[in-house]
Amino acid sequence: MMELPDLVAGGLAAGTLSALALGGGLLRLRRQQTRQRAEIAALRTQLDGSLRAVTAEVEHLAGRRVPAAARQVAHPHVSEPGPLQPLTNGTPLGIALENVVLALQSEVAAQRTRVDAAAQAGMRGATREIQAALYRLQDALRGLQQRYDDPELAQTLFRLDHENEQSLRRAQVTAVVCGAWVGLAREESHLVDAVTGGQARLAGYHRVQVHNHLETGTALVSHAVEPVAIIVAELLDNALRHSAPDTDVVVSLEHVHHGVCVTIDDAGLGMTRDERDRAQRLVAGDDLILLTDLGDPPRMGLAAIGRLTRQFDLGVDVSSASPYGGVRAVLRVDSHLLSRLDPVDRPPAASAPRTTRKAAADRPAPSHAYGTETGAPEAAPGHHEPSDTDGLPQRRRRTPAAAPEESPAQRPAQRPARRPEEAAAALGALQSGTAAARAAAEYAGADGPGSTPADRTGETDDTDHSDHTDHTDHTDIEGEAAR
Image 1 (tube, rainbow, N blue to C red):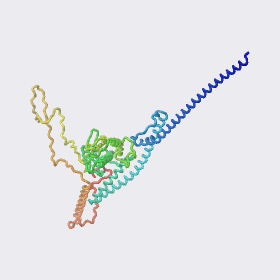
Image 2 (tube, one colour):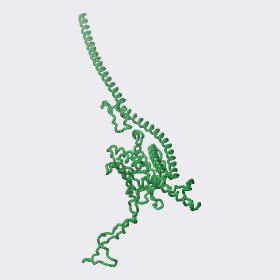
Image 3 (cartoon, rainbow, N blue to C red):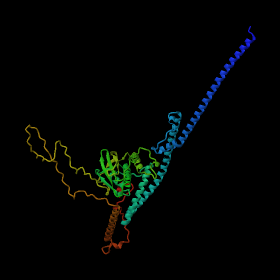
């Protein structure tokens, strides 16, 4: 049996051990709590840093990336800044921010297209009314040209008609850019008439030199006449506007393998590479054309060309430089848009430049005989030249018969194009002379030989002189070329 002191000592020892164990546990718990507090503080600091980073990234998105992305829709050359922290690329946060930018650009592009379509519809309706009024004015002016014989009045009416034609061209180009039809239905016409008809719509038409190297009778199908005239007019307008007023614009009409090319060369300032690339994209008609992309005020000429090239399967190239230092523009009309007119039944306009190409009957027939050469006379029929010592036949040299040379009187006369003032004066003189001769003939047959035509000045000559008037109609491209 244990004694009391031993029990007390054992209890004290057990208590001491328990206290020591409890103290160690308390120390471990306190250290663990300290570590947890440190981890919590670190996590809180990290969370605060992440929150500040996300906040800065969102502010950067709203302040810089979103405006740049919106501008990039209209101006692709504008660069969009990336995120502030490159490490966010590929992370859920970076992917989410990128999706925001893409969604914004898609919606801005859709709304921009919708607004531009509404603007084009409004402008299309307005230009339709303007075109109708200008056509009515054109008919009224031409009616006055047929009615009055005064040369000065005829000259004034010609100038007014030309000014009206320029306004009509601008309205027509605006309508084409806005998606409207070309507005006119033409019949088949000579291609040279379509070119000179486009030339006649410009203020500086006298600076344009047209060289016609086409075969006689080369024409356009009906639905291609007006588009070709519009395209030529716009290309010539650009050439005239961007070249000095004392320089000429040279136009050449040539046959090529797949059809016909109309080449326009100017001696202007030319274009930089970026300007040339942008112009080529516009005339190709591949990109969507918006009014907001055409400047302020909008420059619609190249955009209208792009619309027409896409609709009528034409080709325009402005990527080359002119040999005169400016720009070379080439309009290509493929064979399926070409036809042929009999130049006897339907000759081209009187003012159109005559072709420099000789007729097939006037061209010397090329000699394709094997071994034929010029310079040696042909042997007479029945005459046999001696063969060589080997008995082999010898090739004879033949000289093609020389074509008879045309005398100056037999050559077709090349009439220079007259100015509208000269044409108006000649027209007035012709009509006055015709009216005077007709009055004299009527008087001689009715009143006898005792009086003169001056006694009949009070009478009115109601005879229609339209047969002597070189006038045009807005449905006939040949008349426009004759102006």
